[in-house]
Image (spheres, rainbow, N blue to C red):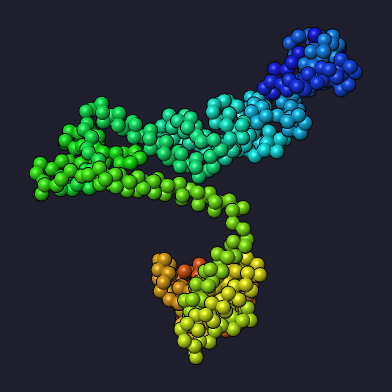
Length: 497
């Protein structure tokens, strides 16, 4: 095919070409010709000409080699040609002759422009919906953040966080300011801190400009700690109201909003001007306090993000955390007997030991017990921890099963049942698979039947059985009969229930 009838494709997502590769191919073509044909299809606008579907480097190399003909495989025309082109470039560009990140993003945006939906694109190219959406937005923005992503200086998570910031912030300048000063390669915690600091600076700059425009006066740096001379103003007032009242403002170190003070007309006692050392000391305290206040929110977000990530905590680390809790239950006097039975390592009998001897022996015992427990599956340790968390009481008599009408009002701490025993039975029956004994079932039903208006959410077994066959309510007597007391009395008197 005449090379003059072949045209580069406007759907091509590559941004420039590998000059060395083109040069190498050109020399090869001069020697042996083009071995692998390029793929083309009929040009939609120029009759008799063709667009390249695959083989742009080979086409450029052939031009450079001075070729007038180029071997081609011709594909038929199709209304999906541009979509198919983009799909082909994204697919081959991720396996052979890899695309740059910016080129992948450009291809994703082009696919979206051609009408492909996010889900389809993601399935075709192994991307999540989030990644497809973010790459499309990066291709549109072409700002410093997308450049950083292309260079590997920003991750997809970074891009998502900052695009969320752009969408959610009321300050349109915040996103631009954040990415302008974004440290290269910053991790998620550093980015959160950078956002907080940038937002504080922008807010301070805006408020300070308003204050200067209205002629507000700044208080001296020592105003916060010279209470004999300066009175702090805590009332909620607008900037203008503070100014009209004669208050003076002061921005603490890195603070985004000012504090307000009123200079007293007469001081209770004269104080000398603070020395430079005193001012420096107070400013250092302000700096440290501001840093701690600023990092508090960043720390919380960091913790939340790590807890959400299923890969953060290893199983060994999770077991270690649980064993620390289990050890605390033992130190508080709960669970030693059960731990001893589980591990077959008897707890320490300190009857004839002094305090130091007992402490040494106990530490040895708990160390050996923890080594044994560490070998149990994590799920078993979770169940054990829950057992020790709420130790059941008085389950050898009805008091431990007693119910109360207060349960329906959320007053959960009224009986042993609502304190620990329901949780204990819920765990051993529904998690550990314990089968209730007839004596336990009878006790639960008896205590439940005594309080018909109890909370049904705290029933381990159905209280009595079937509802009343006459009126549909639950029987009041713990006999298992299928008719309630009221209906039974009506039957005996001959009245219709």
